[in-house]
Length: 348
Image 1 (cartoon, one colour):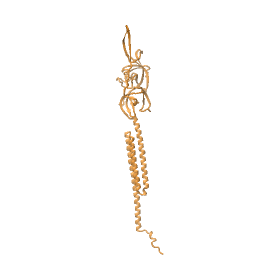
Image 2 (cartoon, rainbow, N blue to C red; image 1 turned 90 degrees about the horizontal axis):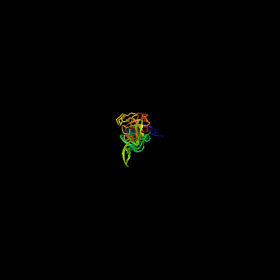
Image 3 (tube, one colour; image 1 turned 135 degrees about the horizontal axis):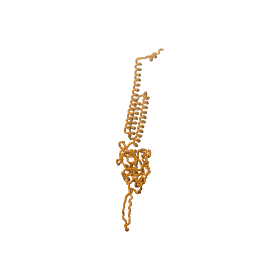
Image 4 (cartoon, rainbow, N blue to C red; image 1 turned 30 degrees about the vertical axis):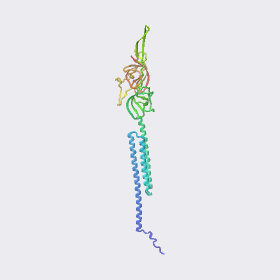
């Protein structure tokens, strides 16, 4: 028995060569197409990341330049960025579904890259928001609106070294004390001419009403049953006349005593010229309320706080010097915040 055609199937024929070449070409074309699609998706993911990074840098630059960006605007920009990333991720996923199984792993890598980019962008933007919030908090304490005015304490008022209750207490002012202010912070504190701060809500621009107490001594004598005034005198205060060091003086009573030095000017320099035009001199110059101690008045201070002879001349005045108060000029800056009480006499 003879088997015809059994060995013919293993022979390489022209038709088999053509079929093999066609199948091989199709496979190579699929591989090249898949690689191209993967490359395009990776390129798009990188482009999205570059655009996102540029947007984040622009937000950072705008935050640094302006010092403050509203939370609403930041939130909107973050939402828009996330929408763009989600949309980009959806497009990448859809495109991957339409490709062959060979490109699945590439699609997964692209999706991971997009997700990572989104997370990085969210983290970066959140950092930007935190930085902006910190900047706004700092600005609210330091931004000053400069102007010059005199305000008055509505109650006992704390003077602090900075614009907030957490700063050190420098001294206290009494109700009605005048304060020369040069600026106001955004969080509601006045900056005084001496560089300290007071809470604006506890001050007023209305000058308090002051009354000067005077005593009129009337001497009368009786003549044939009739009474008529013979002398009427007005003393600066109700104090008695005394003689000290051979000088006639009038006791003015107990005064609040503070100290001051060269006054800062808006241009950054300092002034030592008094309101009367003289040059400040330690041991001689004082500031006072001219309605109580007029300019040029010579006073004697018992137990001179500077250790001198106690004689001073009223040559200056200030917005914070009101009523029974004197402000002694000293060169020593460490004494400018001191406060004490002294007995004051007017030299006649």
